[in-house]
Amino acid sequence: MYPTVPASGLHFKTALLPQGWARNVRIEHAGGRITRIEQGVKPASGDERGLVGLPGIPNLHSHAFQRGMAGLTERHGVNHDGFWSWRKLMYRFAARLAPEDLQALAAQAYVEMLEAGFTRVCEFHYLHHAPGGARYANPAEMVERIAAAAADTGIGLSLLPVFYAHSSFGGAAPAAEQARFVNDVDGYGQLLEASRTALTGLHAARLGIAPHSLRAATPEELRDILPLAADGPVHIHIAEQPREVIECEAMLGARPVQWLLNEMPVDARWCLIHATHVTGDELAGLAASGAVAGLCPITEANLGDGLFPVATYQAQGGRFGVGTDSNLLIDLAEELRLLDYGQRLRNGIRNALATPERSTGRALFEATLQGGLRASGVGMGASADSDEPASAVGLHAGAHADILSLADHVALTGRGDDAILDSFIYAARPGLIDCVWRAGHKLVCNGVHAQRASIATRFRATLQRLLNE
Ligand SMILES: [Zn+2]
Image (cartoon, rainbow, N blue to C red; front, top):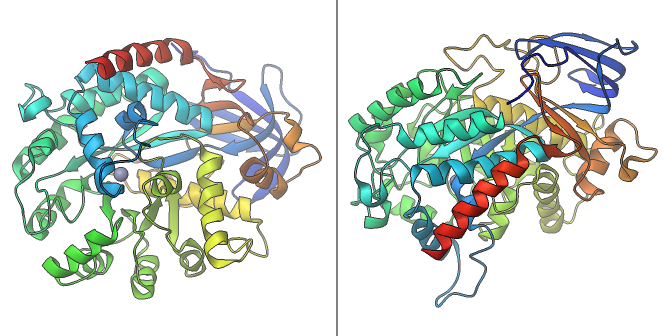
């Protein structure tokens, strides 16, 4: 599907390297990794050329199938609309999906991610069983569909099979509409093993674990499944909604993030998704733990979750990245813009995320890259099958050849260095991303994924059928 022998050289007039901006940068790659970077050189014959070269960004949180219900939940409900009424609609949609439907919806989401500048996705995957909860003969049936969607599109995959056992705190029995998600600890172990096999052959795939939330896993179950992560990442939804905080305090005697920090070995392998409702102490503890806060600004805004205090957290050295979560709108620049604008609106301060050395856009972009790689189990020596260098992140020899180029766009007129990223995030309509390479393969050209048309056709046919059933 993709060129088997991609051009081995890329040349950019400007590129963002780990040490900063550089001019006339030539990047060689082989076997999916960058093998050499030179500055101040002319392109070699046969090089692909671009204006601005940037590292691809990992998307640290996605439920791919939810792309199919984007825009269908914006009507006034009978009762007070909020996260929980949205979740009811999501459950109804999820209940209908056959394995091939999941693949079709996920492939569309992944095309859009690549076109937006996301070169890897952390898929927080919880649709394990057949409609009604019957077991597929192959425990990795649905995992294989996610892996196939990643293979179809070329996106890097960090798979996080979800452990889900209960409807609420205290080990409450799962609800009927959660039957497709539910496993006990033994079943989950089998799912992980089958998932590991399913990912064999998918280039640079990573496997981690994802206890869904403190609602869906008891403390005992959490302790039981943690060793199954080996040294892969551990992701968990946490403190997304005030009701969850109240129930957690009542049942576990502490707020969700506080409980996790007190009771679990939270470290750099962990990614706490949302962590919206945190106290100052929880925030400081999270920053000190080395874990990544997985922020999903578009989805959090849409669901009315609240605002994570990212400026305070960043000042404490906290790590974060962004995820597209519900995939309502897949847009890297928009996630970063909204993340910052939430802080500005709340605090009445501009450029709180900037540092003396970095503009706001660059600080956001680099933090998102570093946090995203860590949460993906890439680049931080965080995976057992990893031969990753443990230090630098971004475009350097040894890194995955996951690269974006920006187009010669009117919004970049006269912009250099940090102003390029500021213009990308704050001042441009979509269309700034020109090409995207993942593992050295050029997947997006002139802003369009090579398989966009065929994948969109399948997505539309799938959705037409699902919505008319
Ligand atoms: Zn989520």
